[in-house]
Length: 360
Image 1 (cartoon, rainbow, N blue to C red):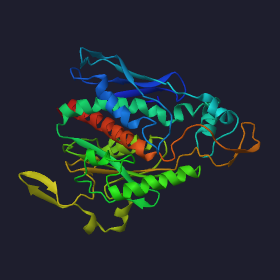
Image 2 (spheres, rainbow, N blue to C red; image 1 turned 90 degrees about the vertical axis):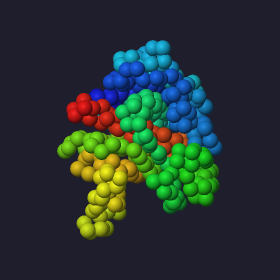
Image 3 (cartoon, rainbow, N blue to C red; image 1 turned 120 degrees about the vertical axis):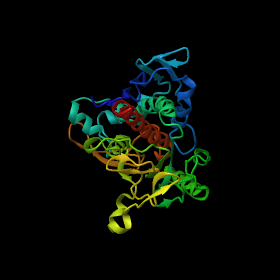
Image 4 (spheres, rainbow, N blue to C red; image 1 turned 180 degrees about the vertical axis):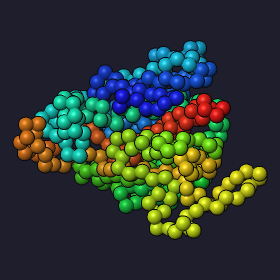
């Protein structure tokens, strides 16, 4: 079904933005991993609304509860259910969306597909669904500490609109990313981004940008040939996030401006280990990791729901003008950083378990 992701480490998210709650069921998690609600809460706190002046003011603590699959602080190997109850839902703020489709949102397409939709905050189309993904990824990261000690996933805001940060992905740290509310490890550009988001918000508008993600310490050999190439699974994972419109790995589209003699990564021996002199492949060749850092870039569009009047139509096909109310992010990127890390962790743990199952 469309709400499931993964093969060996499979998750199924559930819940709507303004329903009773949201969460995830995780199946395939190895047993005997130490796991507590606090382990999950750390990442949920980075994703939650209301955490700064440049995100939605919706007041949700997003406190998680582990309902199954953990006993005496350890995973059992059975399905793990994590739930987060909605506390500050205000469905009345979306009354206009009951009869009018928001431009560039999922209102019309959900109606076209199912013949029914939850117009209260977008239902499943809301980014609030990603709580389940982030919770599951916290468990995945626990498994990865045993399956691949030293593996590290760091995502950060690279651009907001036309403001571009200068970051060394080889050395960037989580502490640098978390040092400001926009999650950009370039302090000067971070302040520019914050000021610009505030300006856009004051105008009732929204803005997009890109997130870059580096994965360091991945062993060589993860990934499957042909359809389950690891970059293919990463692409699907990232493009399944709300508001995503583009994905690159390694040199990405910039690689099209190079010749093969410029783009090829020469192999060298370093301390008895096969390495590449350059890394334009982005750590993946033939769909399989080569042990070098994996570099990803994901493009996020401006938030679809804005406070400016917009031309649209009603559910009965009449032309109208819609001016949204409610609480919305003027820019999704600061809160999308932990979501990108989450999807990377879910892909990696799935391929780690598949590798162990196939070749030991």
